[in-house]
Image (cartoon, rainbow, N blue to C red; front, side):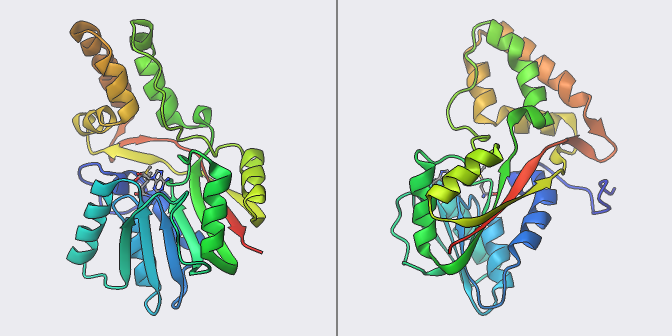
Length: 267
Ligand SMILES: C[S@@+](CC[C@H](N)C(=O)[O-])C[C@H]1O[C@@H](n2cnc3c(N)ncnc32)[C@H](O)[C@@H]1O
């Protein structure tokens, strides 16, 4: 079976499968060159770091993430795939002491929206870039433009009326507003900030069961469900299942999404 992009059908969901369409766009925007030294911010399990390392055959890539298990997974995968010019550090990109001017390019696939102090964090990344070094990151547009978020919230909204608090915590949409991002990056010392609208669907799994497992794994979903009594939780899961069924096509469960590719340059 093929998905609607003409590629082989996908198996069980993970973040790499979910974002496969976005991945290609970020890769093109990043345009990693042979000798580049690349920093991947909030690298997760390191797919984009490995891709950058492969493109920078005579350079290198460093992935950093605050999650120790993610960094361990990233190291294992790089070892398994035999990518040698790649390294990973368990570090908070907001404060980590990177080598000054040690990188030509900083990239991120949805790993820059969670800083406590975004100006300080991007200034820190800026110091790690050489003059004229580039920042290329993908971030979500506002929640209401992202069908996946709207649909999940709607399915859970009755659960919230039944006593579960609205999902709080890290805001995946914190860089959705271009004027806010321009302000943050400007204050952090970046120039030439530009945005490209990305309209690609996200993949949630080959069938409704897999998609439901994936969505129940989101922190916001599991927190909302965890606050309900068993009967209310069962009803909320049934609503999620129904909503996911409505998004099932021949090639699995997909949702529309909107993101920005943000590019900027260190003067
Ligand atoms: C949505 S995930 C994206 C992971 C990865 N970029 C990918 O596309 O597979 C966001 C990642 O950012 C990491 N993160 C959040 N705040 C961070 C910080 N201050 N420094 C480094 N990593 C951070 C999280 O631990 C998480 O792995």
